[in-house]
Amino acid sequence: MIAHLLPIVVIFLTQELTFEERNKIEIIDDDKLVPYQETYFDAGPVTGNILNAHYFPGINLYNSGRYTRAEQECSYVLLRPQYTSAHPKQNEFMSVSYYLRGMIYFYHARGVGHYTAAKDDFEAALKWNPQNHIVYIELARLYASLGFQEQALSLLRHVLQLMPDKIISDEARKQLDAYTKASSSSSVTPSPAATQPRP
Image 1 (tube, rainbow, N blue to C red):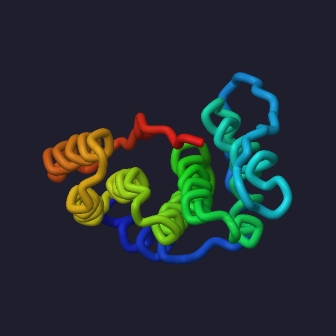
Image 2 (cartoon, rainbow, N blue to C red):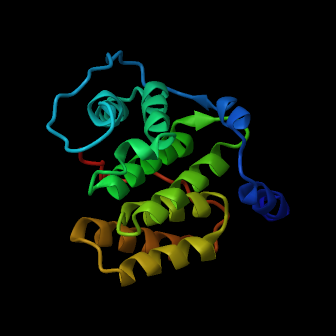
């Protein structure tokens, strides 16, 4: 069954989504109500208060299961890279924002294009910061969930060559073993990594 869908999936994953197409993706929040809260870190040189008003609250909302609002905060940061251009950690801020938004589209959304949106965001996260090793694992999970085992295995082998920290390398090895064993089966069910972004 999945083999017949692969050409369609490949074509769809290579298309970039428009702003309107992204807006049609439904994001699913957890049941708990967690309010938005601004943070008050001395976060360094930025334009306005983008880190304390959007970046850090976005991470907190994501960790609390308020994915709709977290997606909005991440998008706000991503649409304004010039606001963090003077900060020495801009690449990290942008990479984490893309990673979180990709996680939302992958695990907490439904509708046409949510896998493409997740893939695009994971790839953008790696462009901003190739050392954001957890992104390789999530991108591998995305490919594996769609039946692209070889691409998933290649990403996991690549991240292990980068010699990430122990938590990431253990997770990559675990996924590599699981996908290697499951390469003869038709489906692999992804699960979010235990590693959460740190503000």
